[in-house]
Image (tube, rainbow, N blue to C red; front, side, top):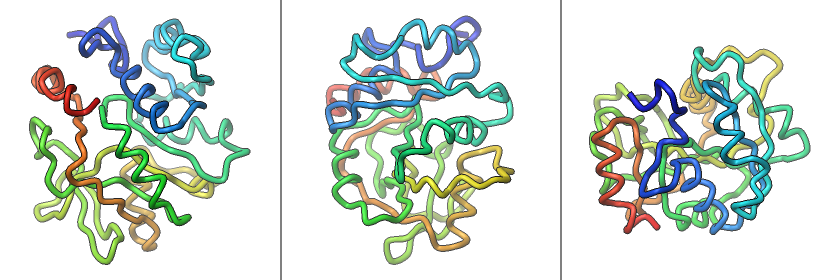
Length: 217
């Protein structure tokens, strides 16, 4: 297993670590400042990215010492680094996507918490393992991997308000916090159907990403 000695964000796709593909896509869309949350083998990620200078961006770090709990803990670990920002982009390090997705998200943003969704993902290796959403009137009405009926797939790219962080954070998964927002009608959808992206979760996904990365770039 690659991840026995290497954190997943550093697994290489066509010669570049997954996280580097993500950062370069965001950079092309105009994002230059990053907070990278580290956990498992986090020093390896810091060693690779350093301060971001080699990618011509600025990288700061937040440490999630409870990374075993889930990615919700990783999101919360970043909150103190985001105190000066009213809004921030959230991206998964194993979702590779076109800069066009980020541009569409930024162009459509109206102040609501927003998730990029895809009604017909072209490159996913196994949609059954992805987080799905139900939609109505531009808002997400349900979200989860186990949805039996769904309208679109969660791309792992969000634009969120700083006030999603609460003094009491019981959410072990990002999806749990998004489900809480959904219950309050506070999560909008940005439709990115037709724009390329892929989630890399298995070796089969990695091979699919190698075949798709030309379309995504």
